[in-house]
Length: 145
Image (cartoon, rainbow, N blue to C red; front, side, top):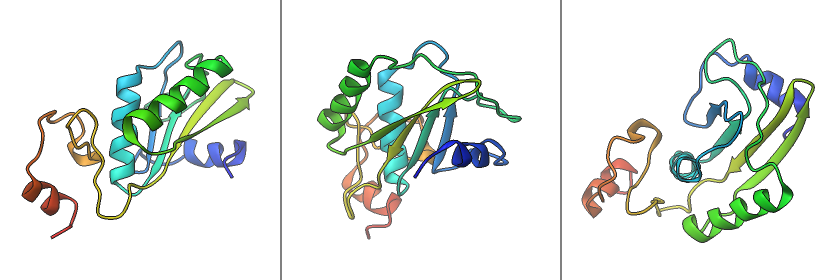
């Protein structure tokens, strides 16, 4: 269960990693970027995108208004399912310094790398290319050989 104690532990982590990504997103957050991070995290075995927290250490809660209305939050969750075919949970935390929104991304299905618009995102390859990778490249990259 993700709660304020979990968030406090994440805030003091020395660095982001392939399972944890922080974004300030004070007012809003780009849906396409969120989808790409979800794909990258799923391809790494799952993880969390945390909105409303400063990107760089020392990390602090800055609050976010991204997807603030319940209808907006439900729409983005449905959009993720529609585009990526995975269910991503969204958890809202009421921190004393502002609202924090956490997207909990599951691992990709075994043997099935996820893509977004033909691009197979991977944390170490994030935004390097938006071109489709060959089947052989995918097998090598995701250890399916």
